[in-house]
Length: 422
Ligand SMILES: Cc1cc2nc3c(=O)[nH]c(=O)nc-3n(C[C@H](O)[C@H](O)[C@H](O)COP(=O)(O)OP(=O)(O)OC[C@H]3O[C@@H](n4cnc5c(N)ncnc54)[C@H](O)[C@@H]3O)c2cc1C
Image (cartoon, rainbow, N blue to C red; front, side, top):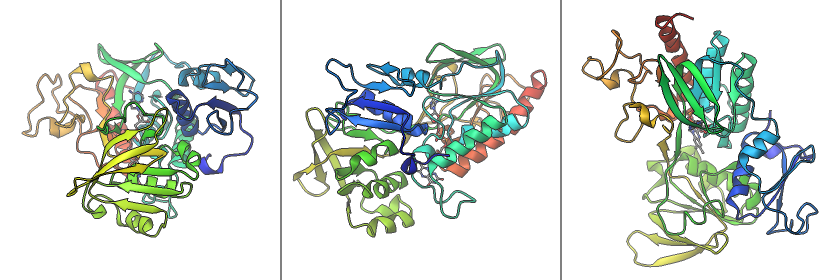
């Protein structure tokens, strides 16, 4: 099991790059979230004279444990170099699961343990949003809380022990129907065919619309609060935008390393959107300042974030705040990418609609080909299920996601039974 803050001292991988490089950030995030130990050499800091950083080297440079040097490295090259890009073992699966967050991993554990040939396809790393969380305090059975990374790695090991295959570091770009099968087309060209499909692809962060944000993305401005960045923020001025639990947890994590953490919240009170235990922890942490009714007007810096412009409701004044890192935690939008052209029914916010919500009056959804109604977690396409945060009406919690993942497998069995048995 791994935990971000208790990594062994002997790293296997050396990553050399600039702290303002978005490519280097993507690799750091990938390695951290997959529990890979690495040494980060920041050429803008005290790593300028590191022996691996010779003149003319194309950065980011990733030196693998066997000595292989990947210049101008990408996430896919690093994943392949570390042997993390296995090809699917089977020509067809009973169930393909898109996303290895709590919903996808729970489904994988139940499906594989019940004898289904199961593949999980994950764009980045096991754990999803939960995997980036420093401490989940309300997950059943962990009275002291559990780090998201531990929960994710335990679940992945459990799923693999039952025989599920987890295909990492390859997003599903497209899902196409093939008779009564579904075929997932992965970014690297691999195709995965299955008799049933579960979308467990969660949500991605909502974008902050302010000048400078896109330009400085990965160069001091980040969506979410990736654990890989916490240690690098030692002594820094950190700003977190958002009023929900994810923003609150990010504050607590970064306050352990940063000189100062400023939480910018649009609303007039944290109680509207954040759990009381986090509000209490923030109030008791001297290096966190909460600024209510505030919004970001713009972010500035040449090759990395330097300052932010902030406005406060009721005042015309625009204040300039020094900032080394900005973490944007303002909620998510559903990740239904890959299934866009299938004609799935989405709700007004873009989440996948399932079960009786497809036809609340008790009729069948338009074009539905079966005599029965869609099963509870089934979309308007037979055998195409959705679980967790990506599903319309879902409760955005780990336990709810794992519950739906587990429940979906019982429904997959029923679908398989009516399409040729198991
Ligand atoms: C910072 C933070 C703190 C939180 N704290 C708590 C807490 O304390 N308690 C609690 O109960 N909940 C908490 N939550 C919410 C909880 O983490 C989510 O509800 C839960 O992770 C949802 O699980 P999921 O599997 O549905 O989706 P996700 O966790 O979003 O996982 C979806 C996965 O699908 C992958 N994916 C997406 N698209 C593709 C694609 N095209 N191809 C392949 N893979 C894809 C993603 O990379 C991701 O790994 C927190 C969330 C955050 C962000």
